[in-house]
Length: 346
Image 1 (cartoon, rainbow, N blue to C red):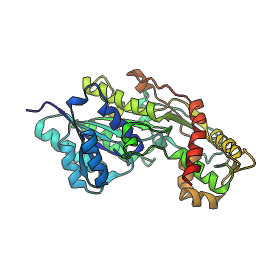
Image 2 (image 1 turned 45 degrees about the vertical axis):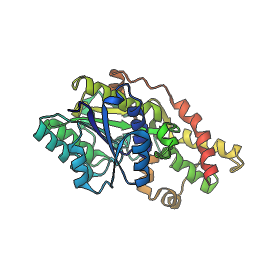
Image 3 (image 1 turned 90 degrees about the vertical axis):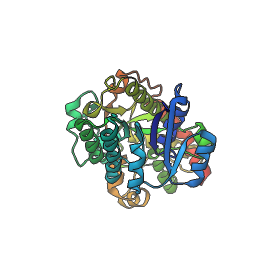
Image 4 (image 1 turned 90 degrees about the horizontal axis):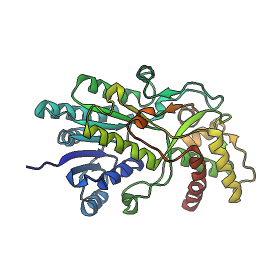
């Protein structure tokens, strides 16, 4: 009988998911893992199976019965994209509940939320004094139920309380840096983030660095390698001793190792645009309402993601040994190669 640990992972082709999967493949205990991933692309599934020895099921996140079955067969589930998809998390939790009922196994869920759940409506006009500490459970419980990612996070916390799953929720902040692991090189996983590239693309299109309001709101940031390390530290700790890492309401892990104002990010973009001869002035100007719709899809999305305050201290991860190496200064330095890469793409 196989003694391998069955692991199911979503998001293998993504920026976070690929980075986590590559670390699982290089884990000291990798030969004891039996990893299955769900991907949409049949070609990428073939590469994962032939080059990386991973089982790849082809399907979408809308195929809830298929996902429920895949989850039921796994002791550990990494659910890494789609922090707002309620029917998807319900399917995952159904699979975990079935496994628990059948085998008496207490499956582990490691899920991605995000510090966007802490966001206010500052619209770039002011910084806030409110800072969330993930060791302060009452403060984490006080996040409003209609906040981004919150409906999914609440279902997971409730499942942990009911006792059929051990749940660990990782909340990355603004992630930056190029992912350079083997899955990127094999053409399987995405290598760049979302938040800064969106601002860069908008600034390139208008040939002038842009910001929301006065760019005064504050956000935390974290390098892709540091956040991938946090997932692995939570995983290692949970597998070794389910109670050593807090879970459920004690299992929200804020992923941050620096803090920036949006003005700082936009100003850094401005300097690069001037250096490349694209813009004459490094000083960012506020996006107009029309520009917010044009470049970010809607004013609401733009305000929530690039104009809000989201202040966080990731003390829970640090308490179990997470040691992020990068700072906000590294994030600002990373903007130059990101702009250059996006200019090349155009």
